[in-house]
Length: 437
Image 1 (cartoon, rainbow, N blue to C red):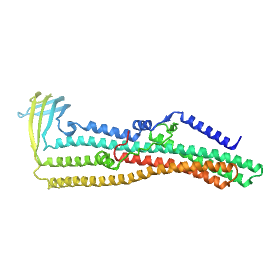
Image 2 (cartoon, one colour):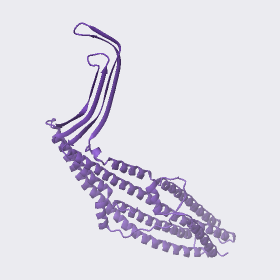
Image 3 (cartoon, rainbow, N blue to C red):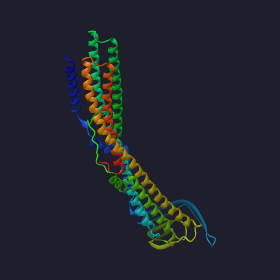
Image 4 (cartoon, helix red, strand yellow):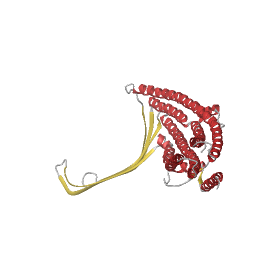
């Protein structure tokens, strides 16, 4: 069979195997994200934290509702008693029984505490918002990591395909070199060089398969599922090239969960200061209850007694002097608010700086996609010409190998350029709090 026909047949076989592989069930990036949202341990923990915060938002936790308590006490005793009365007579009784029973319901209610309870209630609401912001940050971080791992697998899958092509060409080269040596048109050195290069390609394939398998385990771990679960990923990476820096800056300032969390922390610091200031006002409380009491004694002037009825009352407390601790606490609260404002300004600057540098990387990576795509096409054309020249024996082995390596390196760089551009896109959308989920 002519050499170029054998190459054509091999390419057809390779293409058929790739199509067969891709016809299997493919895990899409959307399915991957859904699995991460459902199974990832960090997301589950953060979600439960939000539920805990939701339970905490209640007037009862804020101290706005009354506290009602029921109690019962039943005391009994058996004693040997002896009493000497004022007239000198003595009364003695063995196994004298004494008992008392008390039960009732009491209500305590703080009616006013300088509006501290209302500030506390608002703080519980802010804690819930803070939990939501932290959950969003965990989701964005986790989903971003999952997507990067996913597209890393896509890139590696493309590199495996390129290495497959290289190995087929290297095997054809060994066969051709052996035939040329047999008929006396090539030296044994040419055959040995071809075999060494083939073994090099096979080694690279084994390493690439190892990396591919390890990355699949990593993705399964991120999805919190059986680490041995087998799957394939999409064959191509599509990059969103429409991102604009001004739009991203606006979204960062309005949607970034880290920044939102710091704004909420500032609000919490302000509410904590309100609670501190509440100590300057009196605390007014009311109490009421119903009590029943009964006692019995085998010896004494009164052998039994019983009482029942309501009780109620009001009270107030006011801190008149506490060693100037109130003033110090308020000053500390104001400094905490000032610190949160400084931290917010610092965080904004850091986020915008990171956004700017990442955006420049994003633009560079997009431009590299076009450049490396052209390089791949050139390398492919050069390889086709080189293969034909090598077949008819007008170029040395080193030129053939150089063209072969240039082609595989061009394919790898093109695949990596798309992957790096996709990573930049993911990071930008993470910063903007706008990652598609």
